[in-house]
Structures are given as C-alpha cells and as structure tokens.
Image (tube, rainbow, N blue to C red; front, top):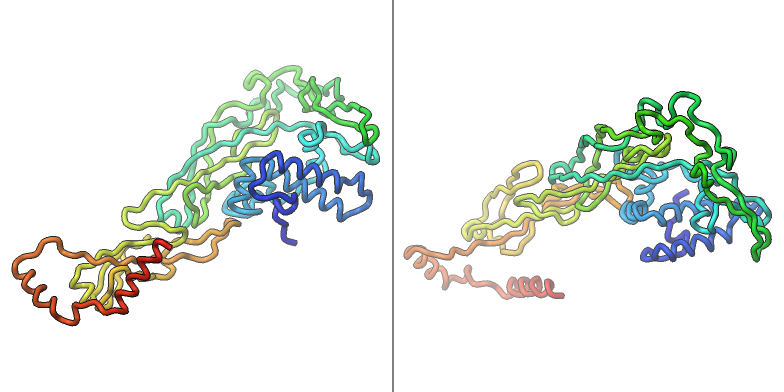
Length: 390
C-alpha cells in the first residue's frame, strides 16, 4: 500500500514550523498510543505511521529531502545509493519510544495509561554528515554520471575495531544502569503514576564503561583518516538538488551509526544552451536572406551539432521544437519520467550598415507587396508581445 503524505499524517501544512509539527505528533501519539488502545492493530499502525512522519519532518535535512524528492528522498528509493532516510526498513516500536524523550520529557511509557511502556534501549552514537559539492555539465546531467570523492573524515579505529577499549577486557557493564543505558523514575501526574526514563548520567546511555582506553584512538573508537567513495548521480538532476549516500559520512563513536554523505549539485552554464527545467533553449539568429529564402542551419545540442531546415518566410519569434533533445525529467520521487525538448527561438539579424548597392536593392524591394507585412501577421506578433505582460 502506498504511503500517505507525512504532512497529511500529522495534519499540518507544508509550511508548518518545527514547534507545530512537534505538537501535532504529540497529539497523534497520545491518541493512538498502544496503552490507550490495547489489541487495536489499526491504532498501532497509525501510531507507527505518525512516528515515522515525525522522525522525518522533525529533522531539517530529512525534511528538505522529503520536500524535494517525496518518500523516495528518505527511504533509499532514488538514485544509486539512495536519497537517504529509512532505507525502506520501517520503524520498530523501540525506535518510536526512543523519541519520546524529545516529545514527553523522557523515554518511558505511559504508566497512567496501563503501565505498558517500552523497553530501554542503549544509546548509539551517530557520526556527523559530510557535505561535498559536485559541478556537472549538461552532458553529465543528460546521461547521469559516476563521481569519485576522496574524503577526509573520521573512520573506525583499526586497532580496537571501534570499541574504544584496549584488549578484550577493556569494557565493563555500567554499575548505575546495569547495562540498560537509562535510569527510570516514577512520579505522580494527572494521569496517575507516570514512569519516565532518562539517559544514564554515568555511561551517557551506552550501558557500558571503558576501563582501559585504546592507545590509538584514546577511547573514542574512531580516528581521522580518508576514504574514496564512488557516487552514482542520476540523470536529470538540477542546481541545488542533493543526493544522499547513506552511511558514508563520519563514523560514529564506539561502533555507532555512521553519518551520511550529502552531495550538493552545482550546474555549469553552457555557452550556447539555456536550461528551462527539462527543456533546453537555443537562440538562433538568422540572416535576412536565410529567413526569406529558407535553407539549412547548424545548431548546438548536448551531443554535438545538428542541422535543421528553415522554411522560406520564417518569421522572428518562431519557435522550432526538436523533441527528445532536452534533458531527462526527474520527478519528485527521483525517477526519470521522459525527456524534454530543445526549443530553437528564431531571431532575424537586420544589417546595421549597408553599401550603396545594397541600399538601392532594398529601396527597390520596399514597394513590393511581398515585403509588406500582412494584417494577420501583425496581429499575431502583437498578441505574442502582449502575452509577455499578462
């Protein structure tokens, strides 16, 4: 079944602020919480759906990708390496309850609603994202391209294999939380007794303490190094778009979750062609004889030069369309949906200086009916000019 729009799930507008999104999710979470709806599968699914929507819309980077590419922007459905997000795996109930500290002030359940709650979960450090820019020409954009980046970043420590501990016995269970990563407190509320879980102050939520720190990384589990990453950029991307490669950012401490690599697209300007979304525009300047007599002219395309036929009597402002000679049209989900056209906008060059013989020839033609504009053509040009200001 197709996913619903995340804004629709939370009942907010696309322009909603972070605070409005947070309040909307809190309302949905209370309404469909499993403790208030025991055994109700539909309520549980809506609870998960709301949590998934909030997980994306509460994160500025993920929200920007979702606004640009739709669900494919956050579930790995577009481009090589995906556009980031859930990776199509969905969310577990533990994932959902882990967000409650942000919404309800702790990670616990709703004790007053029936005492269910979630199981505590150890904290995982997440590495920071990396951002790089790549400049593409129209040829790269038309076909898609693979680019390699040599990244300076934090990588897993090879000496301790990311644990941060020296040797096998360098880690012990936290004596405060007994390995859960959180401590629980119970307090009276208007709903009854409510339990909340907060991060363990001794181990920082990891559930373990490093006794003997690794000599190479100082107990962090990561060191500064480099990695060569190959990125496949799909055809049809445009200036300002962002391609996300999951897990290729900085490594997380203590075998945590790596960040993402965010590739920002920059577009090189073509010396002759102008891009208009998936269409390309070329301004063709004809001589008066060619416009009047017709002929064949050469124009640039992405793949090189092409010859087009000019009909006799071609007027300035006429647009010739070469179908399929534009760029792939990438839709909001990151997939190509056809190719644009090359639009040739015709202009006619009027000589600024004339020889005596040329002037005499034009004066002779001036009285010819063939050189006088007809009424229908004048009206057509006037309508086209007026449409520019409507």
